[in-house]
Amino acid sequence: MNSKIAILGSGNIGLSLAKGLIKANKYEPEEIILTRRNVAALADLAEAGLITTADNAHAVSEAGIVVLAILPQQLNKLLDEIKPAIDVDNQLFISVVSGVSCEDIRKQLGLNVQVVRAMPNTAIAIGHSMTCIGTDTASAENMQVVKSLFDTVGITVQINEELMTSATALCACGIAFFLRSIRAASQGGTEIGFHAHDALKMAAQTAKGAADLLLQLASHPEQEIDKVTSPKGCTIAGLNEMEHHGFSSALIKGIKLSAEKAGALYKKEG
Ligand SMILES: NC(=O)C1=CN([C@@H]2O[C@H](COP(=O)(O)OP(=O)(O)OC[C@H]3O[C@@H](n4cnc5c(N)ncnc54)[C@H](O)[C@@H]3O)[C@@H](O)[C@H]2O)C=CC1
Ligand SMILES: O=C(O)[C@@H]1CCC=N1
Image 1 (cartoon, protein in one colour):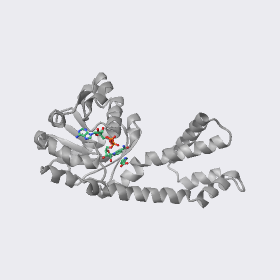
Image 2 (cartoon, rainbow, N blue to C red):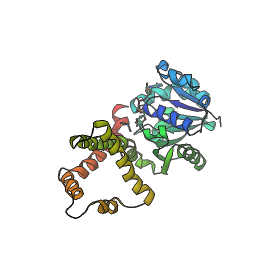
Image 3 (cartoon, helix red, strand yellow):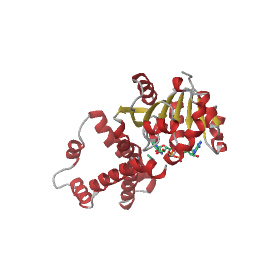
Image 4 (tube, protein in one colour):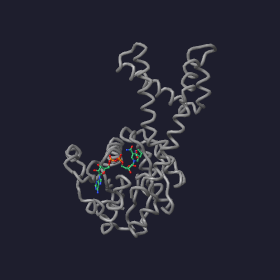
C-alpha cells in the first residue's frame, strides 16, 4: 500500500487529524495530502510541507489511505468525483462522516472498497482523542491498520457499526458538551470572586483532575463524588441544587437528541 494518506475535506476534524498525525510522528508532512475547495485556506500547511490541492481525484490516486472528512451532505458529490481514481485492491477508506454507513459509501461508489468508519474528536490535534472505530466488511488486517493509526493520537475502541451514531454524540459532540460545562463552571467562579481567565483555568484543571481520577484509578464517579461531599457540607448542597435544576437530565437528553440527529444527517440532507 502506498504510504501517503489523503484527507479529503480539510475543515475542523480533517485538519485536527493532520496536525495530530504529524505531532505523533506517524506521518512526515510530505506524506499527507490535504484537499479543500478553497486551497488558499491551507497556505500555512503547505508552508509546513504538507501537500495541498483542490483536486480530490488526484489526491486519491496518490494515496494508500483515503480519509473522508467532509459533511454528510457533501459526500455523494465527492464520491462521484473520486470514483475514477480509486484502486479498489490497494486502498483503504476511512470515513469520519457522521451518519453514513460503510454500505452507503460502497453503494454510492458502486465499488467494493474496504471502508472503516472512525469517530474521533477534535482533541485528536493534541493526541487525546477518544476514537471509536467500526466496520462491516473490512478485513481484520485493515481494522488493525486503522486502530494503529488512531492509537497514535489518543485512545481507540472498536464498536459495532450500528453504534457509530451513538459514538458521535457521546465522544465527538461530547467535546462541546464538556467544554460548555467547564465554561459554565468558570462563569460561576467569576460570580464568586475570580477573574474570568483565572476562573476558566481553575475550572479546566479541576475538570481534568476529575476525569483523570476515573481514568487512572478506574473508579466510579459516585465513589469519587462521595469523597467530596462532606455531611451537611457545601458540595452536596451545590450538587443537589444543580440536580434540582436538571443537570444530569439535561446532559442525558442532549446526548440522546444528538445521537438521533447524527443518525439522520445523511438521509435528510444527502
Ligand atoms: N468537527 C468535529 O468535531 C467532528 C466532525 N466529524 C464529521 O467530520 C465531517 C467534517 O466535519 P467538520 O470538519 O466539522 O466540517 P467542516 O465544514 O469544518 O469541514 C469540511 C471541509 O470540507 C471541505 N469540503 C467540502 N466539500 C469539499 C470537496 N468537494 N472537496 C474538498 N473539500 C471539500 C470544506 O471546505 C471544509 O473545509 C462531518 O461529516 C462531521 O460529521 C466527525 C467527528 C468530529
Ligand atoms: O456537529 C456535527 O454534526 C459534527 C459531528 C460530530 C461533531 N461535529
